Length: 408
Image 1: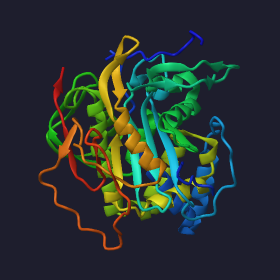
Image 2 (image 1 turned 60 degrees about the horizontal axis):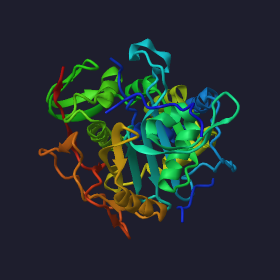
Image 3 (image 1 turned 90 degrees about the vertical axis):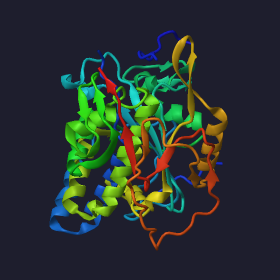
């Protein structure tokens, strides 16, 4: 085993897979990236003259792809919803892409790691956020830009995997941890979050108690706020301005944003507005690095079409079950293995899940929220797995509010 290892610098049967002071955490959001593909889908099927240019422009903007470890590429699907289930990993890098506004960093860490699973029948989706300080085994991964491979590590924080071996290493780490095959992956930087929140026109979030984060200079009063651009990025990055000041609290705060975005996109017909969807797609391809399997816009579109009609009640936003602890003398969080086994067995067996625990320390249910009417076209799900109460999160139909605090 080699000693030349990146280290975290911070303290404290598979489903059918589709054929066809330092500033903290990037905080890009799974839901934003998911709807990027929907943007491409609408552009591809619009048939308007401008759509032809949009497809050409987006296709020519896609950056070189990343080869995943053990990757086998098949032909791209036809236009239409992708066949079977999908596992896609979304990674948020904290490097800032070299932009000095985000502070000076000596590392590139995956401070946001989110797994999206779409069921094979396209009736439900599960979105799992992995805490950046979660201690996990890191597998041997090829070095990026140089010959050879890094040796495996028995325990390190999950957020070193990106520095250790790039996007492909993050995918391999999560695949080994969960037992799932993950054929699709994407990485986004800070600027991408800003541009994509601008493209959608902002997201309206509820704040139950004021967020005052002196570490990153972000303040948001109690009440309802429509945030985009820099403020959206700061909202997603804020840790010390959220109740408890932990990364676990920040994840539940990010889920406030994600669930609001899902509801807003559906209610405002965002995904049927060619101008907005083109803006989203363009912002994505200009600011994302994707696996080779995602470089074809038709593939992105087909994944989007599998997502766009899922009832928000059936989109579960889940935090990987964990508890505070230490490994190798360093503080962080450790897996709650029994609960994780239940969660990933359900995903592996392509079963929908239902939460029984709380929303998480950084959020609470909005007491003023009204229950959304049931979509008459939706059908009850079969074989639903009730998750242990140690697993926190919410479904996308639940209206939640951020629980802020003051940190100077």
